[in-house]
Image 1 (cartoon, one colour):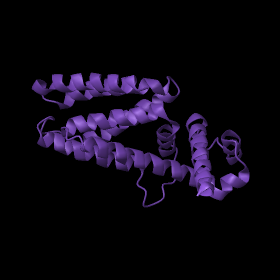
Image 2 (spheres, rainbow, N blue to C red):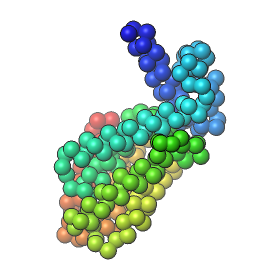
Image 3 (cartoon, rainbow, N blue to C red):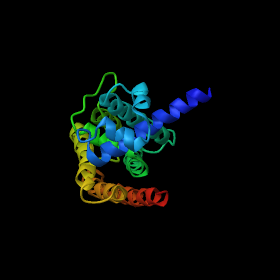
Image 4 (tube, one colour):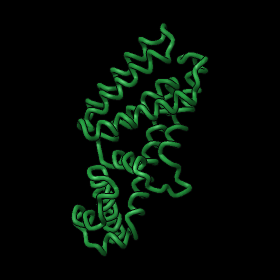
Amino acid sequence: MARQLRAEQTRATIIRAAAELFDRHGYESTSLSDIVEHARVTKGALYFHFAAKEDLAHAILELQSEASRRVAGEIDDRGCSSLEALMRLTFGMARLSVEGPITRAGLRLATSGVAIRPPLPHPFAEWLDLVTRRLVGAVREADIHPDVDVDAVAHSLVCFFVGTRVVGRSREPAARLPRRTAEMWHVLIRGLVPVPRRPRYLTLAARLEHEVMAVM
């Protein structure tokens, strides 16, 4: 049991080290030797868990997918409106990006052409599904204009959120992401939400930003 625990801890250490380097330098510019040095493990320990750099990338993408689904499930359990759930989901992902390197590295891997192995969905396909289902609910609940093109809005929202982080990577710290997420919602709410319901969701965007910043 102790040996198994040590093996799990070593694996987690290697994954985190790889995520930090992938996020900082990119997948192509990071070697297995870099990861060994950063994780402070032997090459034997790394190869015991991962046969190739691609396996490490896949492990990070799996963890990112699990985190996305966990955050979405926790929000769904709260029973809030579909639009609030969608807003909380984006702020939840922003919080994960600030708290640790896995989500940040997963995003960078998703935009770097790393092959995604089935049955794991591509992160963007998974996010599009999560967003689309909540937008459909928001239209049904009359929180979004009934004539919107849900597919177009879902695509634009995912591009907006991902692009904010991609642009911000070289221009500002990850800790700025909650503010950028709030700015994104201020733009989207004015275009998507009927006027009588806008104050509620504009206030929510500000509150969610505050909540994320408070736990950083």
